[in-house]
Image (cartoon, rainbow, N blue to C red; front, side, top):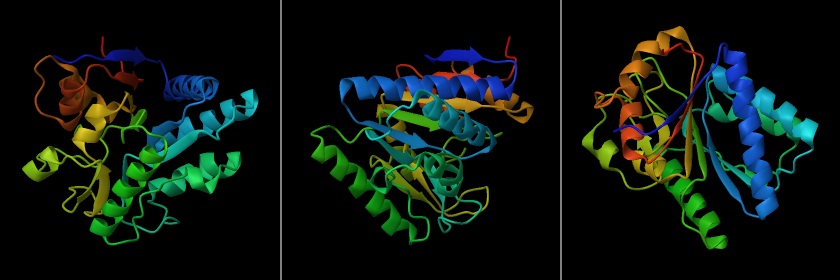
Length: 241
C-alpha cells in the first residue's frame, strides 16, 4: 500500500515556491537543533525553479547553510561544467548565489570512470556520517519523475542487480535516456532516507504519476519507491482529482 502526502498546486511556480519554503523550514529546524542535514538533489526544469525560489528564501530569511551538506540523487557521466550536469544546474542557481562552502558540496564526479565515481561517493557519504557518529542515511532526497515513472536514474525494467543494490550509490550503464552512463542513488538509499519529496510537474507525466499512485500500482520506479517507504511527499501541478 502506498503511503504518501499529495500536495497539489495550480501552477509549477506555486509548486516550486512552496517546496522551497518547506525546504528552508527544514534547514532552519536543523540549525535550531544544531544537527547536520544531508540532502540529495536532482536536476530538471522544475528543480531549476525550486533552486531559484530556495535561493531567494534563504537570502530573505538570512538562513545559515553551514550545517547543510548536499549530495545528488543522480548525475550524468559528464564533466561538472557540462550543460547536462545536474551539479552545474545547482551550482549556477543555488550554490554560487549563496556562496556555499565547497566542503559542504559532495557532487557525484561524472567525469571519472563510473565505478570509481561510485566508490568515491559511497566513501564520502560514509566518512561524513562517521565523523558525525550517525548512520550513512540521507535526511532528505528531492526527486523528479520522468514520463516513464523513473526517479533518479532508476528506470523501468531495471536489472535485478540494480534493484537489489545495497550501497547508497551505484553505476547505471544502460540508461534508456542519453547518456547511457549515469550515477544514481539506489532504491535502498531512497527507502531508508528520512524524507523523500517528489516534484512532479508537466502534463506529459500525468499518466505515469497516476499509475504510480494507484494501490497495487505496476512496478514503475516511483511506485517501487513509494511502496518501500513509510511515507513520502508528492508535490505536483497535475490535477489528479
